[in-house]
Length: 179
Image (cartoon, rainbow, N blue to C red; front, side):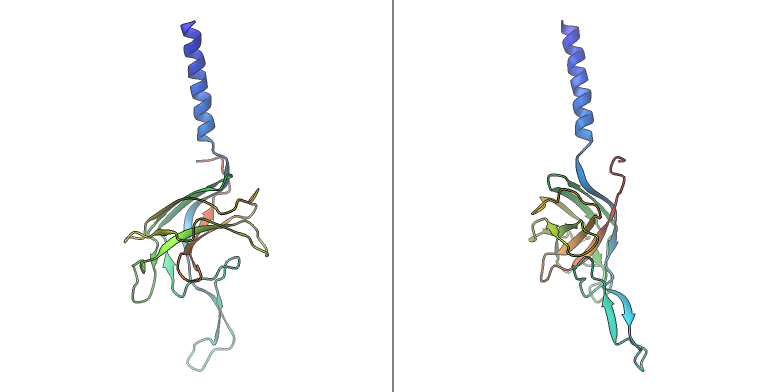
């Protein structure tokens, strides 16, 4: 009897561990891209060589900030119930007088699942988390709404200040079964 109970407990432990290891992910991201606020120049060049118009790097309706930001590392998982886990390293200004700093920013995460407009934003708390002095951050929160599926996921790391410009984007990890 004791042997059967031990085998049963061992079996349940293995099955329970395998079930816990495989999460029900809505979207996963591995790697990050810092923002370059201008995506291209347009129009005829001025006499001094500058362009009179630029195309801002707007991503799915979200505007960029006025300065370049870089990010060294980003990983994120959005679970099907909306729980969101984001780890960022080295989110820092990539230009201007405060280059290499954080500008005392706090950030939050936004998931957008549509490839074409209209776009629906699913965000963590917009009060966000403060960037460490080296640009590291950790977001463990729940999205304000959860889509049933996410066919074209974009994860934006956004400023908690002002108009909530985006500073970095996650690189989708399309094969969610591999760790």
